[in-house]
Length: 242
Image (cartoon, rainbow, N blue to C red):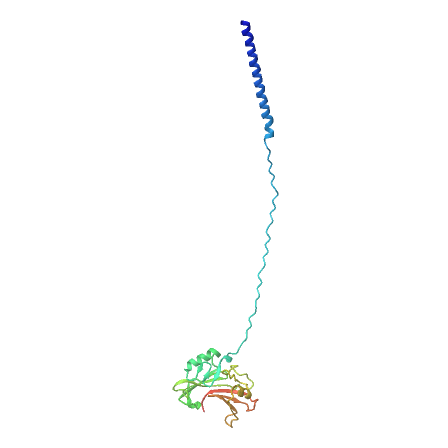
């Protein structure tokens, strides 16, 4: 009986030892499997940076083209815009105040070349008690206190343009009768007849030379009365000694 218990214990012990060995073997086998699987289960990732090329932007600056056109300047004589009429010069009308008229002409032609100041009318054979002559070159204006225009006060009443001294150009240049006439120094009798069909051409006498009455109070003095005769001076209004 005791021998059977011993044998059974031995068998059980052997079984336990075998099982332990088996467990140990199984455990080692599993460990080996995990160990051998680990290297193959870890992926290796390698990042390779690709080459980067940066192209610099090309900027082209085109300078703007500027074309400067020189201004064309045409000098027109001041006198070309001042019409000579039978009742005044430009905007200066007979009967106007002397100071205002003189200021107007000064603005156009500058300071007068001569000024008689107020003198006795008797000295100039003029009507009234006093008279004054103011000139801008060959353009002379008469002022007085008595005329066919006004009486008892100083006022503008007559003008004359030319003649210029021999060999000297007329000044101010370019003065002419108001449009549409445009008759000036050097205009011909033919031009007068074309511009003023009703003009009266006179041969003159020993006191007054050839002339053309071309409007009310407007007279042109001539070299002669032929078609080629030319204007030497112009007079507006009724001056002294008339």
